Length: 211
Ligand code: B16
Ligand code: MG
Image (cartoon, rainbow, N blue to C red):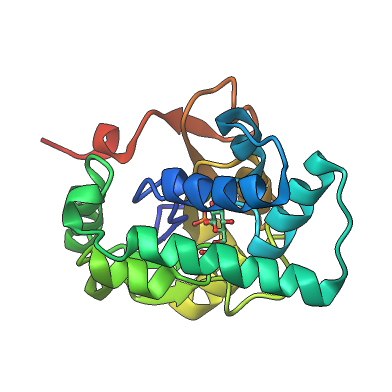
């Protein structure tokens, strides 16, 4: 890797733990549809787009729905999810997240978001870190979901940097693959067992904060 000039952060699971709220909302939908859906099943939805997440849920239940009905179900789930995260505050930031963003800014590293979420901007604002980003690429700006590299390539372009000048911070396997396909150095957030393709793995951003 060249010296890091840009840092591209996934949102859910890296900066904030919204996975539990996604789970509660998908679980509510699953209950309504009579689908058995566990927290272990929810792992398959991490980092995956809303459209694909619903397809996986329906596949788990062996249920088929046409596109119109799927769109209604996605909206239902998203409204529940938004109600769950409505009162989210800075307290929900994962350990070290804000400190690490501030440290990078201090070092002159450019910062972008690279998230599949279509709710990313409102979440960043609730967490009071929106102003720390030079670029935001989210689910409203990409056509192809991770593991496609589009989200990270657009982020690098938005920062005015080459892919090999950027480092991706990702907690999901699909996101790590997207970062590698983009030609970037990838720091996995989690464990080596779960993210074997990452260039290095830390348990959380707090491990990268200089004391
Ligand atoms: P939304 P990330 C992803 O965010 C989540 O990990 C994934 O579980 C979710 O389905 C996806 O965003 C879409 O989110 O329904 O809010 O548009 O990890 O890429 O930041
Ligand atoms: Mg994630």
